[in-house]
Length: 231
Image (tube, rainbow, N blue to C red; front, side, top):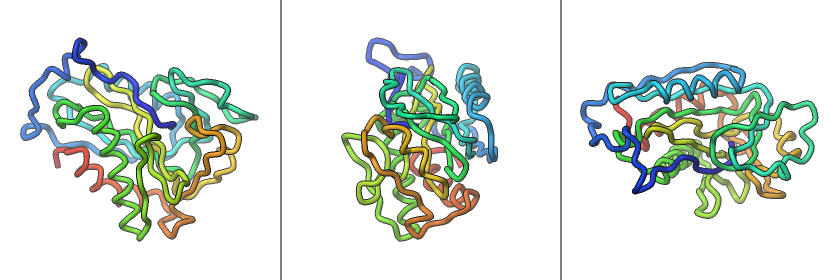
């Protein structure tokens, strides 16, 4: 997903969830789901339903999965960044940011988090996702960094993970896409995240794991820590 924020709360438009006092101590244990290879659009709709139906008693969830090949465009994305999609489907969605690619071998993570309960603002939430990936990379001896001007995680200027989120009623959905061991060629059909010429990289090329299950298990404790999730 391309880097970007959508639905950030404002001082004059605080949602019911955002108005709740923080209750991290009494939060129900977070639920982790490993969904395997799943189609993009049904998963997106499931995130929307979850977020629309959740309340103060709903446990946060983390969904680990991968998608069949698909390009996704953020709510205000320019189609000028979609260069030659060919036979890969294009889906316009409701996250922030521009265009990105998902495909097998990429670990997609959807944290469905009550941000008020976690005491995280939207930008803090994005930073927490970046820090989790940076911590994972460090576990494998890889030095990764975030950039203030372009959300995501980078290794020597090449993008390792993309972030694009939506916040509705104080709950987050969408999330991050971490390149593990996939065919990177489809990224050449777009301007990734709206940046012409942006090069991508992946863990398997940097000495990290090739197996998504291993990567998900290694990333989970970092996400729990940075997102302040109930154990």
